[in-house]
Length: 306
Image (tube, rainbow, N blue to C red; front, side, top):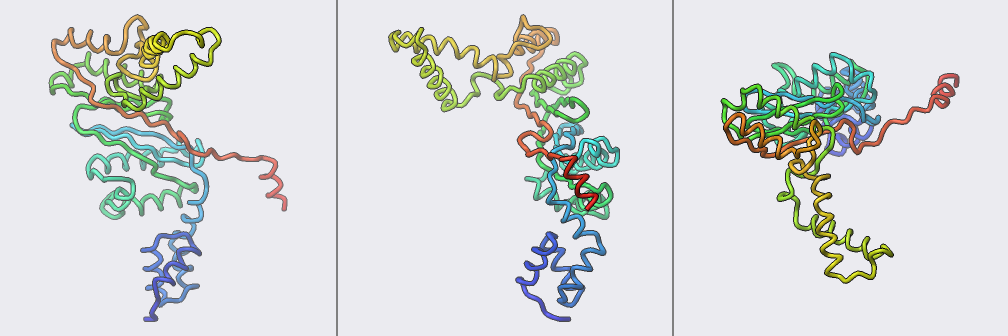
């Protein structure tokens, strides 16, 4: 067997975009011959999958999985919304969520190394899906909570929400609690709160918000000549509105604007005669913050006739 070096492995990776371990296997199988190693990777579809990996994937879905006291939200991206509706893709995402629930990976990198089924790792199954579906796919992020979880998926996977509650087993199975949990999850999907409550807003964030409001008042001709202590009191009054916008428990409840989310939960607590606390929540929106693919039809047609 011909010898090859780490530089050869790196060179093959740069030429094909395939992972280091697969490049090493290809060079081993090809006796160190670079061209044969490239053929080896192409025959197995690995180079084709790597080529697709450079394409923008900002569509896809967010999916949820709950089993016993484990809940998962996961976002997997595709290039087009059409693929996001493909049942094979959706089944794959559901399988990934189940692996996260059962294996508890630390991050996406760790997830990729774990077994998807008896034969393939998540990374290997991921490559298979890229090749069979024909688009770049990307496991972007996930959240995994232990405890009593209620999930809500909006718009077929556009937004996913998971709310983690501190309640006993009997309460968690109560239909009134489950309805309340779904209502709260829908609230989070609709109004996208940043924090659980005003008590959980970091001190530095509060200080910055007050600073911005104070500066705005000083630049307002109607208020600029008022004493500093008066302006500070006005700012303190404005913070109530800030909490209503950014804190889940202080937000007006979307199904009844006459009460806050905290008051709605308290109402259900009283009916059930038990304590209900939200520990934390997660909200994932498909493609949030990602560059979107911009198709230019004229360029596409021009490319076809060249």
